Image (cartoon, rainbow, N blue to C red; front, side):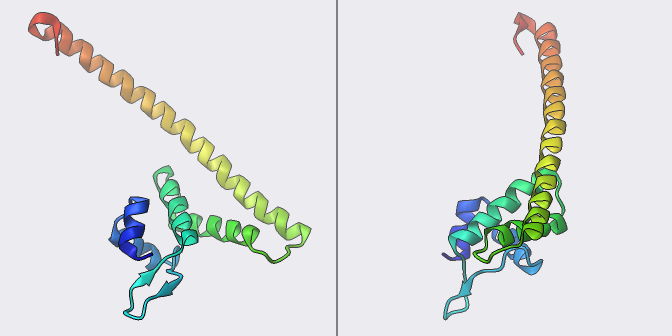
Length: 132
């Protein structure tokens, strides 16, 4: 599929997808005869991983590292036990970091909800008829 369809499916802008290509995170699997970028379902899946990591504060380097680990685990080639376990440990560290970030975001969300409730109460108290 071409970049426009990928952008529509992932919710990422064309500029962002091109940036990820420039940084080596996602390289189109092929180019058309006219030079258009062509992406596969695997490329889209890779972009979705990146899209999910970004709001959690992961760096481009961390995204690349995780994608490298998962790609190597998913590859058909046989990994020796030590290499497989090292890759799994890398993925575990990212999973733990994601869980920690989720916990922080839940605290932030709870604080934001409390703040909004405080404002609603203030508006209800100070608005004629008690409606904000």
